[in-house]
Each structure stands twice: as C-alpha cells, then as structure tokens.
Amino acid sequence: MLAREQKKSVIDQYQKHATDTGSPEVQIALISERIGHLTEHFKTHQKDHGSRRGLLMLVSKRRRLLDYLKKYDSERYKTVIGKLGIRK
Image 1: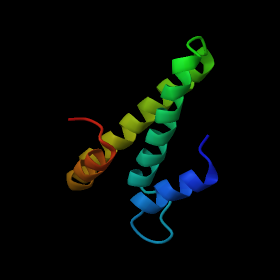
Image 2: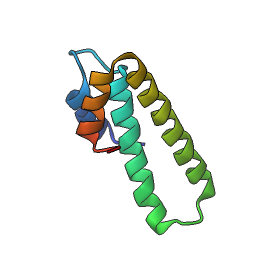
Image 3: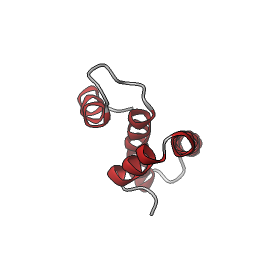
C-alpha cells in the first residue's frame, strides 16, 4: 500500500479538479505507483507468489482502465501515458 502523503501527492498531480479522486487518470496513476513498489519488492522476494498474483491483477486492472480511456477520450489517454512513461 502507498503511504498517505505519497498517495496524496499522486492524486494532486493527476486530478482534474479539487475533489477529483476517482477519474481514470488518478486511478491509473495510483495503480502505477503500486505496481512500481511491488516490482521493487520482487527484486528481494522472488518467491512471494501471493503478491505476484496481486501484481498481475493490478496490471490487468490498469490495462482495462487504459483501454476505457483510449476508447472514450484518446487525448486524455495520450496525456496519461506520456506523463507516466508507459507504452511507446
């Protein structure tokens, strides 16, 4: 899980308005942070298969959110992947 301050900073960076915490951009950014932390975790704990399953679920959830964003608003999709540095 992300620390409260870290989560708040990610939300502040990707939110569209002051009370936005659930837009696809914010959700994708939060999931990407968690994926990054789990990736670091696996460098020292290779046999943690339960967490690996959670990582795979997070990756597929992020993929679904990105597909949704690409389908309904491709400009927002391009902005998000550019900011996060995922994809090409």
